[in-house]
Length: 179
Image 1 (cartoon, rainbow, N blue to C red):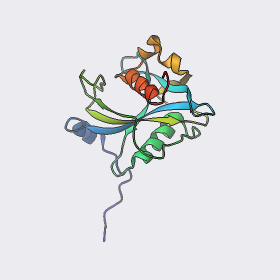
Image 2: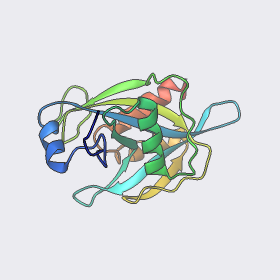
Image 3: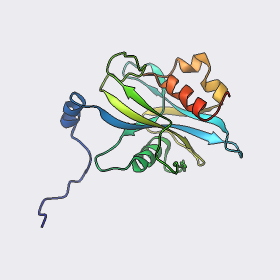
């Protein structure tokens, strides 16, 4: 018989425990490239979040977040899509939780091209079609929908932080854009 008090936040670490864990082992993340599709299933818009970084510089980012202890990949994707795009985004999760790529982030520049100054992180990256109305999360200033050509432009690519511009390029190549 279990007499322990249930944890009110199962799967979450305290700030101190998270800091300690980030210094000792890679963190598992999911990242999603939100897209809108045309009737034939081709990508016609890509969603990016515009936010200020710690220095106040405006940067573009994607839907992203940690996978919690005992949480499935699909549940993590849905949780972060709803958190970052709002409850009415209506993401269409993939039938199979196989990512289009695995991005490995390091706290300093490395051969992967992906950086996260907080930690070593392994991110499973997905392309997620969205059919509903989106409202960006509180720390994002806006959600911008762009054509694949616009998001691939050099000006927009420079606005991504941590190598996420490369992740967008990989996602669009995986989706057959530009072929």
